[in-house]
View 1: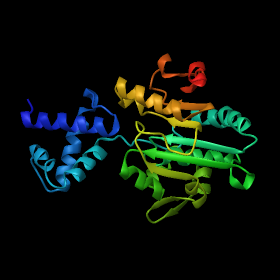
View 2 (view 1 turned 120 degrees about the vertical axis):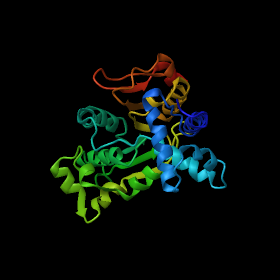
View 3 (view 1 turned 180 degrees about the vertical axis):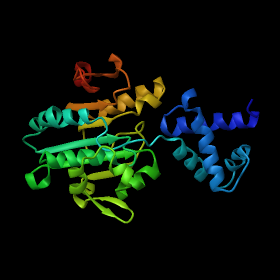
View 4 (view 1 turned 45 degrees about the vertical axis):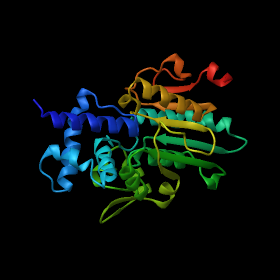
Length: 280
């Protein structure tokens, strides 16, 4: 049986994560709390797990709390994750959005929960391959957000290990859009320059600048409880253009009708605004 103090620390850290990110610690994620505590303590040369409560009351408690939150987040991602979904984006979704924006030749895309940048860079590569670039008369605003400061810092650098670069990228794409160096594979200036990275919480206001034609929010809602999921859906609905599309992760289930979002495809988790949301 765990010490009472340690159980108290786990509860405190779980509340901290919920308050800052909306994510909850279910039983199957319980091990992450122990690992987060061990990581933060080890970096400070502390050996007893119960000392985490002491650290949380020190003058630099804000830094400790942020480190704990960062350690609890799951930053698993890779390039062109679920390739079939990206094929559908390129084959049907983007062409339809381009038709809707044919006069202005502008697109706004939001990658929510972008982690270390593989998803938005995959989108940037796809846009380049589709010819949706300034050189072809298109102005694309590709915004990528994540609650993790560490992940966003890594994404802005755009440098990946051999293992990371080989997950999802074909050889041609890898050689065309990345350059190998002593510290890893660096994204090209063109690809990296297409993305604007921001530290932001999905449960706060959407990124400013107007409605988005396409929003990707994949494998994030699965970590939310019902209340946070409702709030997240409200934010996504608010941010979506009338003709826009929202892509969720395949394992996130079907959205409730009350979300104001309805299915736009039968073979992937693609959504559009419902009639009631459009009339609001």
